[in-house]
Amino acid sequence: MLDKYANEKSDKFNAPSTQRINDLFKYLGVTKLSSCWKWQRMSDEQAASKLDNYIEIRHKIAHGQKSDNLQLNKTHVEDYLNHVERLIDETEKEVKKYVEKQINEKETASGMGRPEKASGEHMDATC
Image 1 (cartoon, helix red, strand yellow):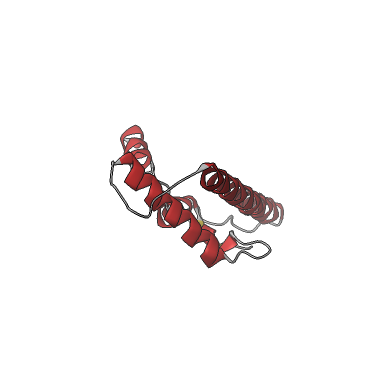
Image 2: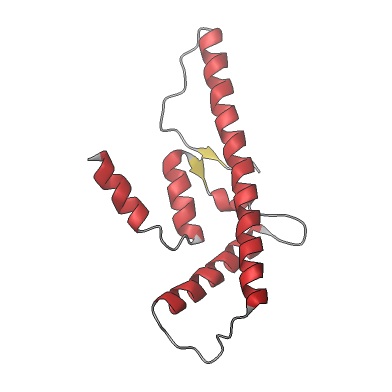
């Protein structure tokens, strides 16, 4: 049953839009991961919009849709790659903080005789 669920989720993840990424990480316990996608001269809203625009272009290409204004070149592809790599870096930082927080809370709770946090609780992104 778990394999079936994982396959269903991964089949829908061939085009990782901001919403799909947020939904996936929410399932894992991090609420609105995309709020951490920001860096100098790039807000989280801009980063998410840029990703979604690239995903839309990818969708058009994959499904053979023609567009008069869709003229891609090497610079576009390099920009896409650089953007995705930056999103990966920001995501890794946030996931690391999340995991470290979970470990610290469990260690603190068990060391002081308090009950551990219930599994399945969500944490807002802390970026």
